[in-house]
Image 1: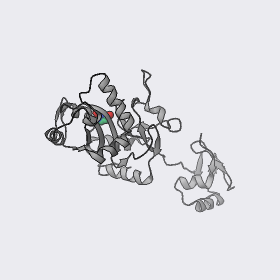
Image 2 (image 1 turned 30 degrees about the vertical axis):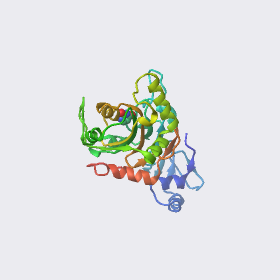
Image 3 (image 1 turned 135 degrees about the vertical axis):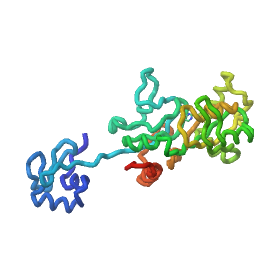
Length: 281
Ligand code: URA
């Protein structure tokens, strides 16, 4: 349970003014705790447990929400529990302290990268709503080298079994851009996935450098979309990583770790969805 906090601090967090101003309310005998007028400034309360009233009106803290980003490792399902007993992303985030955290969208079992979690249901659902076209970027190591024509067809939109994809960004990463992307993906892990694919005969590329690294940014969120798009042009994905989600960048957050988003990032996220009719962050 949360620690007790000083009454003036509690009142200030409830939006009743500055802590000094709230001390004046207490001194004036306008505040009661559990039915007893609080005349002493040292009184402490437990938020959500003690009944605090000002001028006979109940006051409470605004709902506090948290939003965090996780660097999802490979080998975890994007669910809060798994009947098959597979490792779940829930075990990597502070679910005990924030039981209402939920993942915003999903990454496949073997996909790594930025997975957002929030306790703010409205935010989470708005970010997933197709009307917001939130941009998600991916680095995909694929089997073989796609031609310029194949990459252009992805860019323009391609037929999948659930319909045409929308136009999207697609770039072949070479030289330094490839090295930088591989570093963010975890080069050793990506090479391991390549070696495993070679060992079980799934990969036709003769060496690691013959496998192309492709940057894809989509604004849709269909199931296994990036893998299906690349398979559709004949270059199945060997390893997939998401470095960004909307305005948020994973950066160098270590694999398996999470961090709270900053106030600045939070403002950018809410801006992303602000144009929705009627949405109030
Ligand atoms: N597209 C995929 O194919 N898989 C993911 O995990 C995310 C996007």
